Image (cartoon, rainbow, N blue to C red; front, side, top):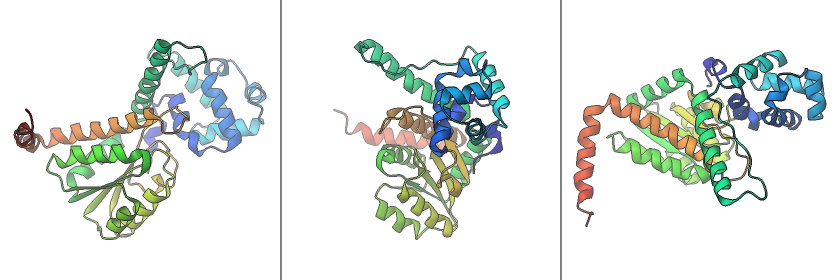
Length: 286
C-alpha cells in the first residue's frame, strides 16, 4: 500500500502528476490546467480557477482532495512553497517550428523531469521495506507485460547476479501459471506504469492468494495493482504520449537503486559473483 509519508514533503506538481490516471475527466481537466498555470494559481481564488478550467468549484475541490491535498488552500500553499525553491526543473512541450537542438533539449528535460519527480515522491519507508523484502525472500518472481518487458528483464539481470533465487516472466500465460505454484516464500515484483493492465493484476491476485508478498513499481498511486501491493514504489512521468520512454527511465532507475542498495548489504557476495561473471564473460571478448 502507499505509505502515509507519501503525502508529506513531496513536490506538489509531482504529486498531482502521479494521481492523473486516477482522476475523473473533469478533475483531470482541472489538474492539467493547474500543472500548466501553477504560478497563476497562487494568486487566484478557487472560483477563478474553476472559471479558467471550465469546471465547477466543487470539481476543483474534488480534484484537490483526489490529489492528496486537504483542500484548495492546502494545494495553493503547497505550490507556493514549491515555486519558492530554485531546484524546480522547468519543462516545455515540443512546439511546431522547434529546431532539432531545441527538440533534443526538451526531450532530455522531459526525462530529467521524470527522474526529479520520481525522486521527489520516493517513499523512504517503502524503499527500506522493499530492500528488506528482497534480501529476505527465498524466491523472487518478476512480472510485467508490454512496455514493462525491458524493465522486467533488467531487474532479472541485476538481481540474479547477486546470487538471489530470481525468476522473470513477460508472457501473460506463463506468468499466471507460475503464480499458481508460488507460496509464502515468494516475493513478487510487479512492474506496470498504468497499474491497470489486466495480466499483471490477474497474476498478482493469484500469487497473493497463494501467500506471496508483493512490491509494485508503477506510475499510478491508486490503481488495482497497488491495492494488491505490500509496498508501492512510484515512477512519475508527465508524458501523455503512448510508449513514453520517460516513465521507463524512471522505473529503471528505481530498479537500479534497489539493486545498488541490496548489493551493498551483500557486498561480499556481490564482489565474488561479479568477479566470476567477469571471468566467464572475458572468454567472449576478442
